Image 1 (tube, rainbow, N blue to C red):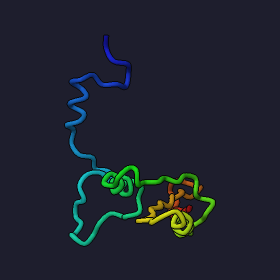
Image 2 (tube, helix red, strand yellow):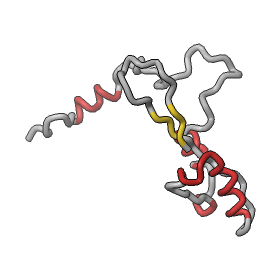
Image 3 (cartoon, rainbow, N blue to C red):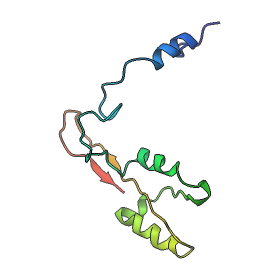
Image 4 (tube, one colour):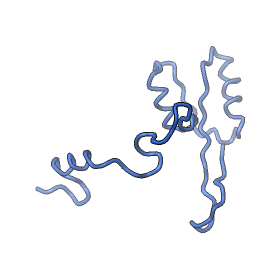
Length: 112
């Protein structure tokens, strides 16, 4: 029985995984960057990779903290320091695309 539309069978899946690297920005190796240049360190992906090295019993995740504003990192550190040592607080600010035409060159808004 063939796979449902949109799903690849084993042979097709193998070909898809061996496809050429993507030309999309931010995908693949960091070409053209010098040793001193790195990707932004405040992205969710970077934080999640860093957390993989930590003991899961020592990680706390707080969600829906946007009501704390841009000071959320300091607020969280201050609050949880009352209960013990806080090694680090990692917060990612989300970027919101401006409303309007896709041709707009407006800067994205940064939300807490």
